[in-house]
Length: 169
Image (cartoon, rainbow, N blue to C red; front, side, top):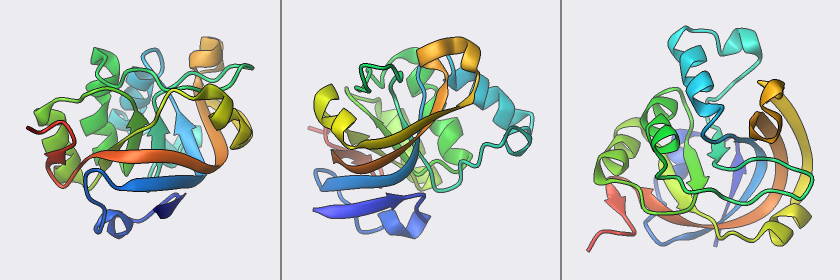
């Protein structure tokens, strides 16, 4: 099992393959349907930095953040999956969620040096591995705001990288 500490460099993903098991630690972001279009807008307007958002080498976990903890939502929802290519271009190196993503999204991941990892919906386990949480953008969205977490050893499986997908037949 490979340990990844975020943020990472693009080169840190070079030796990963579909099906590899990884442990995720470090500082990661959380966002889903409500906030990801807002983050894309900030990127397109060149306003990430002025809002204190540094995405280079980062990870976005497709989840809401509540007192009960975190657990993945389906990454193939329109608002989420359509954000993956743009946020990969903006510097995100890993998208973490659940569900099958399209071949076009897998291709975009390869183009921008990013990957998709699948994490099981195990809220209790993830809560025990979440060291801190902080809202960093759009607090008016409550648990669907953009959060930054510090985590240790989130278990995941690489589901899409280098133009290949775990769902390929």
